Image (cartoon, rainbow, N blue to C red; front, side, top):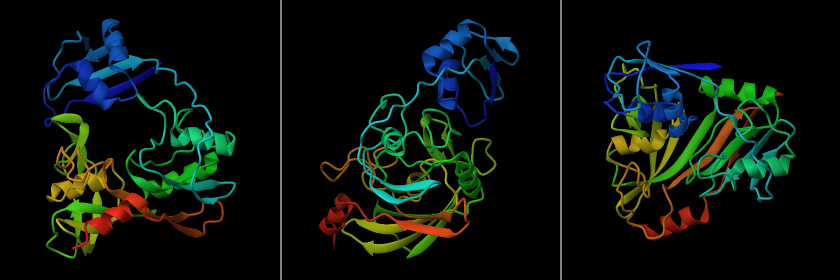
Length: 308
């Protein structure tokens, strides 16, 4: 038996309770939440409600349920671009279009499926059977360096570095427009978009849903209608670079979620974002290690095509 407690904030708009819970607790399907509501396992302000109940700011929602059982991910012989590997960690260069771990609509063909085959199930178990070894992730259409842990000890050590913001993470991206400055810092909290729970947004720093987020950017070159930039993450929030750059009027090229819905470049799949450099203290010997994932061909071709 597990309990989850949620508080509806002032920034969140009224919506059906089943829809609200499915957006803030993504591990539960909407049909499963409706089942719990019917069984009176969801209480609002200490009272059971119907699925049609519209949540309001200030509501306290208690969900009492057995978490759904996760099926195990299966090994698949998918090629990996390995930048480094030892008995503790493996650093891979994730290609565009590959999901990191199985989820709804992506049960197979993920990085986890490939890692299970390559590592012969020797991956940390801290994040469960669907996310073995995964200590951080990047979006499906973001490419580049990602570290995966083979042992629970390595996982705990790297998770601590992520929490302390001591891991080096440098990304390259192409953004719309011409940046007025050569470099800058975006210090703006990020939380769920109150109008669309599937998206993130810049929110007030004192917001209950907002998390401290800092991105340092630097222009690497001007292109025809775009700018080639480098971003260093001081924090690591969901969609951080995509949300931060869009918030200052320079969304990433190809990002239909936070930028123009129609991509101006034909056949471009998702945002132009690449995890170029990843550095951390090795979990066993504490030596600083840094890895660079070369720009993918599609990215290099875009830079050539958009040269001024």
